[in-house]
Length: 268
Image 1 (cartoon, one colour):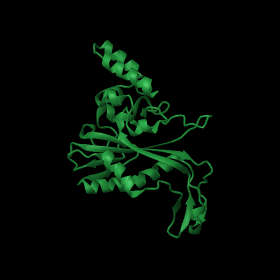
Image 2 (tube, rainbow, N blue to C red):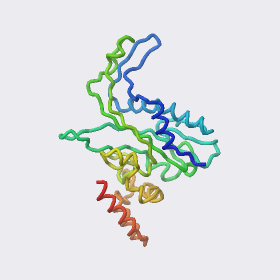
Image 3 (cartoon, rainbow, N blue to C red):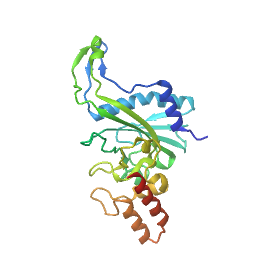
Image 4 (cartoon, one colour):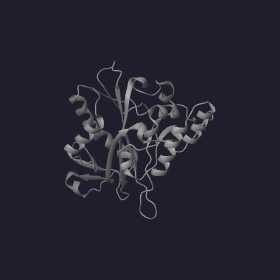
C-alpha cells in the first residue's frame, strides 16, 4: 500500500500546531545564546523539528527512518520497510528566504533541489541507496522572512527568553514531489544543483505546478540526467533546447512543446 505522505505530513503539522520559530540555544546551566539569521542554521532548525514528525510517520506505518550519513549524501531522510525495500521514499528538507522588490512584493522563491551530476547520472553516487530503489522523492519546503535585527551569539539568562528576537518570521511550509516543483535551470550560479521553478505564488508550490508536473517524471529524469554539467560537454540548458535535441533525434515532442508553452503562459 502506497504511503500518502503529503496528506499524512500536512495532517501531522496541523494536529501538532507547530510553531517553527526558535529564538535561542540553551545550555544545561540555563544560559541562552541568541541565533543570527544564517540560512544554514535556520535550515537545520527546520530539519530538527521535522525529524520528530518523520519518525512518528515511520513508527505508525511500520517503517524505518534513515537519516543521511553526510550533508552531501541524498536524501536527508529515507523512509523504508527494510534495507531490501525496493519502494523507498526520499525526503529532503529545503529552505529559502524571501527577497523583496522595491514595491515590497516577494521577488520569487527558488530552492536548490539536489545534484543533477551524481546519482541522476549513475544512480549510485552521493545517495544513501541506489536511485532505482526509490519510488517517491518528496521535498518539505520552508519559506521565511529574515529578521535582520536578530543578533548572533549573545548570552542571556533563561529569564530573558521573552526578550530575544527570533531571527526569522512568517514561516510557510509545503510538501510536494520533487519533480513537480522542479524547473529547467540550476538552483544557483555554476552549481550542479537542480533548481525549483521561480515563483512567488505559494499555491503553485503547494500544488506542485512546475513544468514537469505536466511533462512527467520520466521527462524530468531524462532532462536532468543529461543536463550540461559545469565545464562539461554542452548539451542543452533549457527545455526549449531539450526539445530541439529530441526533434533532431527523430522524436515527436509536439505535445510536450504545446504543454510547456501553455505552462509558461499560465505560470510565468
